[in-house]
Length: 208
Image (cartoon, rainbow, N blue to C red):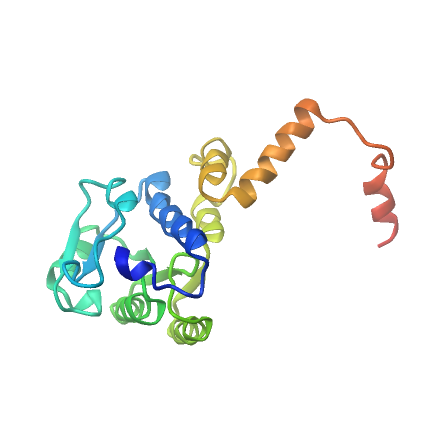
């Protein structure tokens, strides 16, 4: 995804989307997954991939496409993906209805299992995103956000990476869940029941 083009995303708040694309990129490091980066005409208006992403993976293949809209049409990109020898691919891009959708459909036609991160793909309007997501889903692309992707890769909190690695990752990249863990820690270490809290679970069970 290109830096200049990223800020044209209108179906997400700019700050939220910036955090989403960095979180998406950090998933590969968490699970030691090989990564391939690609930009589109980066010397033109699309611009560079954000430096927060390229600095995470200074040694990863970076395919600089000069004209191909669908990344799969680029021979170097195809070779880089095939060299990873993986049958499942997680992707995201800007825009959802072009860079993400076109590549996802091409990968499906090649037999790959494709997961499109809807948190980290953005476009000009929510309607365009919905159209692209419908088309991808009808082709068998699995649509997930970063929380589901991480949970799907982990499978069990007792695994490695598991709770010890993933809760700090969530605290950095998905604070909505990170604060759940923080609240639990605070309750265990410092918590005392407020008046009226005792027995809430039992009373709630009685209403079922």
